[in-house]
Length: 390
Image (cartoon, rainbow, N blue to C red; front, side, top):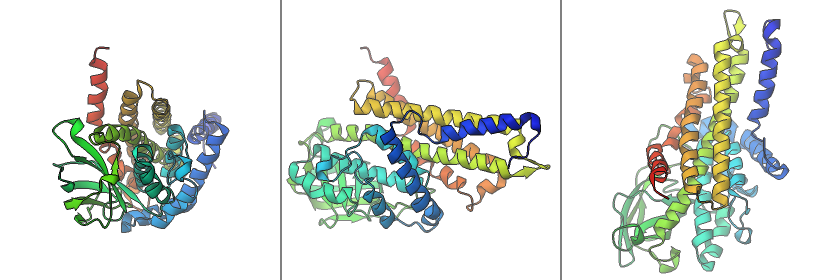
């Protein structure tokens, strides 16, 4: 119940009704999209949110929960159905990842990386590789990691030598999609390989201790005289850079979508806190300052969501503005969503700094501003496109 003076009671109830409608994140979606969005929200609420804090504190990689998600089609969302995927669009994928992230951002972020790897094999792999790897990836019988960070990777006579830091899932996953240099300097010297766990010469560094994203392990992936069959190459030799860039465009939509889920949940948590927390005999929801802050948070959330969904549509349609839009969406949404989560924590006061309250975990899972190209790199991409003569 909202305790408020009669003169503002109608305003508050009306504002909350509008906020509830916006927070459904279903505006503008088709009936089919609303259905699988609901499935994702329900899964997040029932299978992820109750365990989110434990996974974070104990650094648990929730394999069985992710396999349950795969049973709903979330293991290969935009992989083709003939190899076990769901065959959905990039917009559909964004909707699903936002919904799942309300239950656990870190776990959903790993699922998004896994999906990207499965898509790369499906899109650029041979018929043999698609049939060998994709069905088990889509069911999450096996898990994948993406290896792109490079202090200096190189390959001699099919022997891969490198140490690639900051690999999500490293050591716990089964398949590694690796970008490596097989030729001379420049983009055309990079190729893409699938390296299977257990390959001689493949090893892993220590498990990193991170501020957030603790439900997925992060390790260096080390290659020492690691022999990789040529059949495990995706695409042609020298095509790796193009594959990586296509993967990153989608990855930027995915990571932005995951942080949309964090902001979505944080706005809900802040709203609920304002309605029950009392100071000086009144709930915080009676403070016009906090009402305005909540309105700004909801506005930024909706604006971010609209940009991310527009970028997802542009990527699906292979529009010429897709690369810039993906970069804009990642830059704007992750910056704004972090501000939303941080403001939600501030609204909780001292309670927001306690690990008993979920809002602090959404703040700590803020690495989305760094990965898939830092937001500074996004600014470089956008400005380069603006300054390039047509």
